[in-house]
Amino acid sequence: MTTPCSTTTAPARFLLLGDSHAGPVGRAARAAGIPFVGGPVGSGRDFNANFFDLRENDPVFRDLDIDKAYREFLAELGVAGLGELAIPLVLTFGLSAHFLATSHNWQIYRTPAGPFVPGFLGGYLFDHIIMAMTRDALSFYRHARGLGLRVIAPLPPQRVPSMSDPEVFMAAQETMRRALDELGVEVVDLRDRVTDANGRQRPELCEADDPIHGNLAFGRLVLADLLDRGL
Image 1 (tube, rainbow, N blue to C red):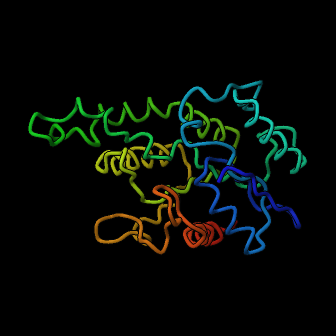
Image 2 (tube, rainbow, N blue to C red):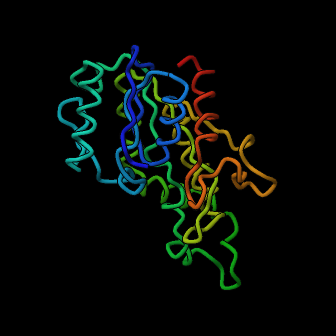
């Protein structure tokens, strides 16, 4: 799921960077013959905090393998840095909500009877905890927007593994969506199209034998949304 899947048989229409949730998008684009550069370059936990620095105006990833893949993508596009990018940037950084929602991290905020303290989810404290957890992801989006780039962020598949708290998963997504909206990032939100009555991803859009990822059919829905946006 973390193998870069660029295809540039024609001029690339977008740069795709992210975690394994970027994989189905890249596979869908490749299957449809939509030229792009990029793909997944790490795990979701790699892109929340402390993962990049700036060298002048260009991000430098602290993980050498990730930075190497990023440099190769830029070279494939014929640019020296992110600021020279002339096509949209599709990012999934900071949007692996199942990591943010790891259940044992949130027990302290529950009442003795079990539910969360009233008003906690989506409140000021919760929002600031989530934004602190994803601080460098948000910094990356902010920097890319500051460079004048068009940035598009697809929300993840609506799949909550057993290690994660479903309520926190849903609320964390809302926090991130609002934060990205404020930065001028275009958020691809397909929740009303991909979920059942319980708000969970429908089986036909889930990767088989996998508790987290969407499949190629899900990737095609994300790609269709990107194409509707003019990519």
